[in-house]
Image 1 (cartoon, rainbow, N blue to C red):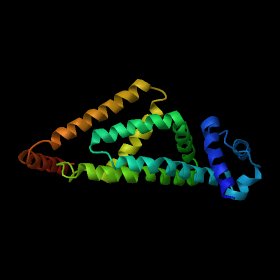
Image 2: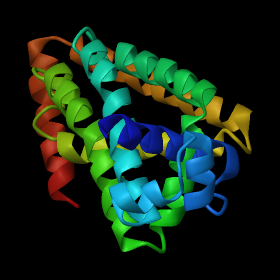
Image 3: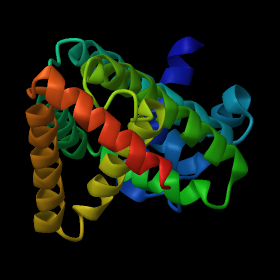
Image 4: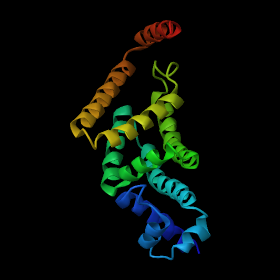
Length: 210
């Protein structure tokens, strides 16, 4: 029974990769999974319910090893390097296409939007934890909303994954810009305690102006 459910989940993901959302039906999923079409409805009720389960299962499988690798990251440049590596792996496996299709479907399906948002939170949580650790002690730590920054980083990489399909050089330039920003933060962190205090004071004054 569990094997059939997993075959359907794997079949749904593969069908999304190869046929897109419009071509992902009970019939096409069952054909990819090598099972009877009726089993889609027996195990999941609807195709959308199956896609929700597939979205979460695929994300959990990818996030688990990524979260372990995050524990070895020592600075923001290493975090971005890990993000680049993950991006390359995900594109090679066809998961960027899956994500694009799910995001497109989420625009008109509240159920799929909820599942996609839950999947994105699986990425955001370990990234937020890593950012909190990496920014600890930095003069920027008191001013940076790490929860918001984690979401911005996640959203940025999702956007770049999709953008790369139409402008590969532009996506590379965006990632290079993030690398330079990470270097700038490292330079700030290397300043002495007096400079740190002055920078904190300056930043607090500026943030109060907004």
